[in-house]
Amino acid sequence: MHASFDLSLITAPARPIFYTMAGPISGEQLLSFAWALADHWPERPIINLHTDPLHFTIVFLTSLLKGQYCILSSNHAASQLLTLQKEHNALCSSPTALPEELVNLSLPPLATLKATQSDNPHLAVDYKAAYVFTSGSTGQAKMHVKYWGELVARSHAALPLLAPHHPTTTTMLGTVPPYHMYGFETLILQSLHTHTATASGPSFFPRDVEKLAAHIPTEHTLITTPVHLRSLTTARIALPEVRRIISASAPLPHDLALEAETLFHAPVMEIYGSTETGSIASRRTINPDPWQLYDGVTLTADPTSTDAEAYICTAPYATPHPLNDIITQKGPRHFTLMSRKGDLLKIAGKRTSYGALNKALLQLDGVLDGCFAPLFSEAELQNDKPEPTRLQAFIVSSIDDTTALMRALRHYIDPAFMPRRLVRLPHLPRNAIGKLTRHAWESLIRDYAEKRSYPPFSIPATHPALPGHFPQNPTVPGIVLLEEVFTRLKLKPHFIENVKFLSIVRPEEPLHLLSSALGDGRIRFSLHHHDGHTTTSTILRGTAKGPSL
Image (cartoon, rainbow, N blue to C red; front, side, top):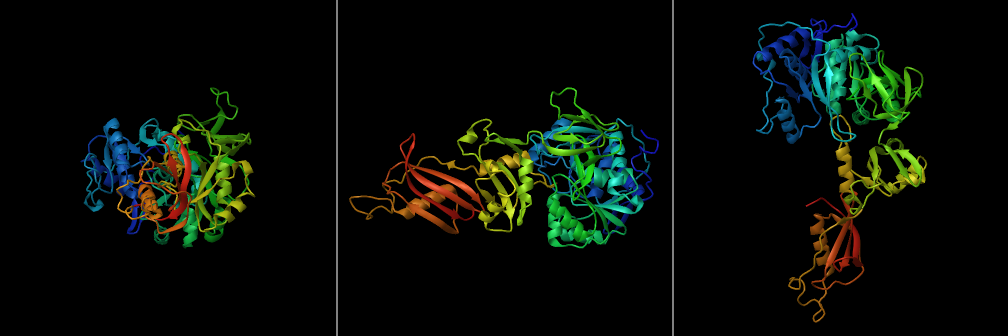
């Protein structure tokens, strides 16, 4: 380890490490709190679920003082936490109540923590400080061990990006959770390993960020994501002392970066990295320059791969990892990002990537968020790995006219990749870090399959609406058919946009219902005669809108 790097838990503990609404918290106070907890907590790993950076850090330091490690996962489902608890013989520490099968070490009021010592021990470079899980954006979340030496080295490598002018008077202000690798590196480790500090307090809503920033006595760096940055710019909050804005977790649209720079009068920088590698490079979004690697980080061709675009990332005291993205090197310290591995898409003999399509979608005026996805029918989804031949796009938009958005999108993408439909949603199911996980993306595809089939049914001859209705020639009234359709769709329609009755229906006649979700509560439906094997003719079709029953 470089001689200038301090391997103790906290570098220069006499300084403020956190700024809270009530005032600063020094490193010496942090050590005192952690030692007090260590006197009572068992020697077991801790699943750290705290969102407040101060409380998260106290639990993290306590685990290190006990010779243990923290487990950091963005998936806080009870089943996932129970699995981690069993596999690691771990305990949870959460600010909120947990199911009774999960043991929760709650953090007592800090004023009640009385320490018997306040030592600031050094850790070995190969000490296992944290087990961190990927966000699941490319599939199943995977665990990676983070060693103390690599964490310290990476904090110093990122310092010129996060606090380029005056580290001792720079405070990190984050909208991201500390249990994600991005927040862990920028909000927790930076303040422990360098002379920067971190703001601690509510920061989920734009006005919370504005209020917290007003209580920071120093200039600050905003740590955020594209989703959060858009909400901050839309709210037009005041950030008078922000000197730099950092974004990560997803590609940042050029127009959003430019708007943020204009509004907040600070350069917007992106971080490139992953849970596996940590942060390794940066760039200013509005400039066409390639990504620049941190000092000490290198990219070399993967000798185990036949793919010429496969690279291995190496950093001090870190385990080398292959990149998950396809890049083009521009010299030893620069590269351009092409696409994610597994993100490539081929339709009608043409190639692109979901990332490129999403980028085009997000530059449309009125589109606040969105993503492309395959458009499958319910039958196609029964295959293990269906190959996409048609696309759709899920959007969050301030514009109702999807036809106009489609026309605008044609200027940016090849006709082969034009979506068959735009599905408007109130929001995309992103996690706390702003990522759309693979599981959430696949759930959208399933929920909005082109046609959903329901079990055959019929209207019984004993239905109370039938007597007296066309005597001697019983016919099911249309209102009865619609009632049955909406019951099976589990839809309570606010209004029926359109409906066409194309054929009469007799009692006991087998019927087959198909539907497609269109977003914003809209559902397209059709009812068919059914002979037990194939659909023979259409009875009715229409579109309605309303909440689920």
